[in-house]
Length: 154
Image (cartoon, rainbow, N blue to C red; front, side):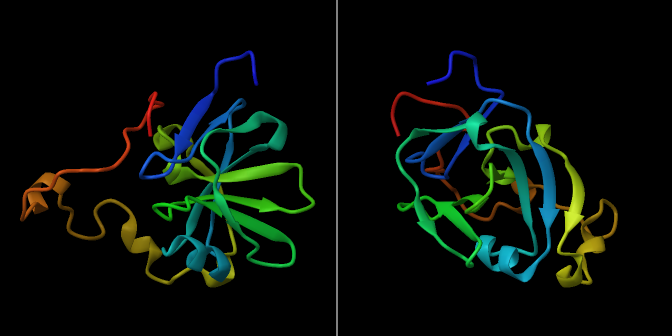
């Protein structure tokens, strides 16, 4: 594997699939309809590195060829969307939310703006009422989510 320490790490919600990046990613947001459906959200936040600076470090993802040009990887156990990759490309894009430290990968560009939902601007601070997770808790919840760091077990 690599002799250097990863720049960033990430993985799925259940911890069965983990990966490492060995360069700082370039992060973007894609609003295209295909990305919206792939992540089940209003856009896909993606962080790109050269494939030579990417490695799966635990488990093996499943994949879906979402078009004639690209494939997407996801966890076969919990379903977390993990990557986007052009089949003939030399880069891979991980879902920014699957990074252990997504705040360190701020977006620098919007793509697929023709499909951007008209209410996206309402997500800016101060546009809608804001409530923290703790403030909205209505039941006791025990998380089964994998922590945001590598562990020796899944």
